Image (tube, rainbow, N blue to C red; front, side, top):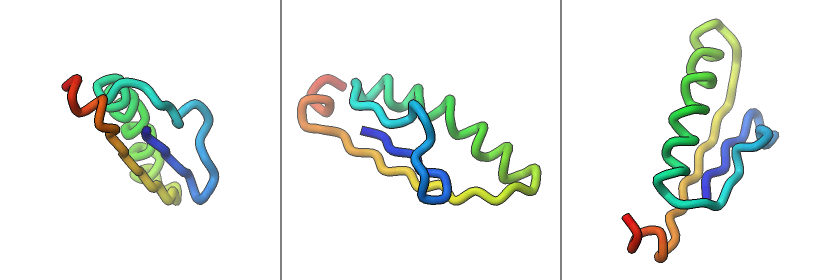
Length: 60
């Protein structure tokens, strides 16, 4: 499960419990937007928690 929080507020459609590979693809889609916001002078507190369950670890 990947949870991405923006200043303590969960961003829409970023909390998913799907296969680890799909989670990583999703994370790669979201991170550039976060970094772009930071580089343009915007303040963003981003917390990323990645949990890979046992069944997902066996799949990869």
